[in-house]
Image 1: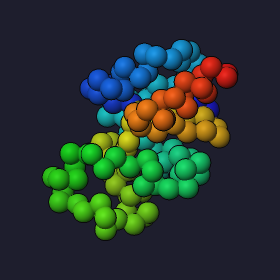
Image 2: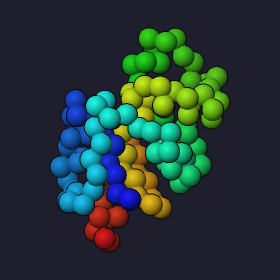
Image 3: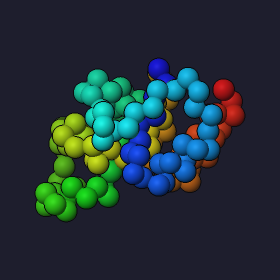
Image 4: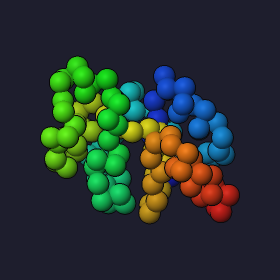
Length: 117
């Protein structure tokens, strides 16, 4: 499995995706094709945390008056499945590796992954 979960309207996602040769990767625009329970669980299997794949910058947090400090792992999972903006992006997912978000360390790890494969 090689999947990239992204949001087309996200300039940062587009810039990151453009850096890599993604031939053979399934591209999933999460607004048009939301992530499934199985995909969220596959991400969790690698990270051991729904919070790690949850975007605390989602506009839905303020709209829904959510206090992220009060959320449990089950809450994170439920929210991830409820609305696409709760997924931290982009997410590059393989059978046994995951790269989540746009921080420098993640991009460096992603670059190393692509250089090694």
